[in-house]
Image (tube, rainbow, N blue to C red):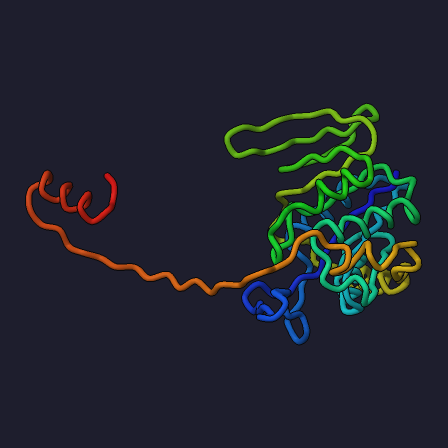
Length: 257
């Protein structure tokens, strides 16, 4: 069985800055980490693996994203791909999904299942899993809490907050993993040493047979047209009197009861 995990390296959420000209996140010099939801997807993939199975991790990003892939290799992934090219810069969710889908088509077409994190904390769109599935001709399933294999099918638990669904899914699909352990596995020295010998392949736009118009800003269907820094202020007023008088005061102030 081959499990493909789509991951992303993101800036530390506490130190994110936006470029006021383009609206894109400034990544140079920012502290970087594996996206927490991608960590959950990796955990799910490693828990699924049995003897003879392969866990493949993939990310699209700058060369520095190799750090995130090494992190995944140390925590159980078997091999990794870095999709990097200056022509990928500025990709929105659709352009990102296009690149990832082409990777699946050309380099890992025999995958059995694809796992992603629910969303990336630097963009928060949550759209890539569904768009990847649509472009790749696969079914997407969101809000996944757990996945296991049973009778040749995927047993999936979806947690919608107000209800929990149990599904049996046949064939390959895209699962968007929403939860996992907040205390990920700490690799041993042996894990770290073994990870150095695991394959990590770098692919550019031409390796994916993509036109310049299909990725990056050129292939993106959304644009940041305006950035507004919202300053929230809170005002308070002390009301006195009978309950009826205070209720009238709230209504006159435009509030509600």
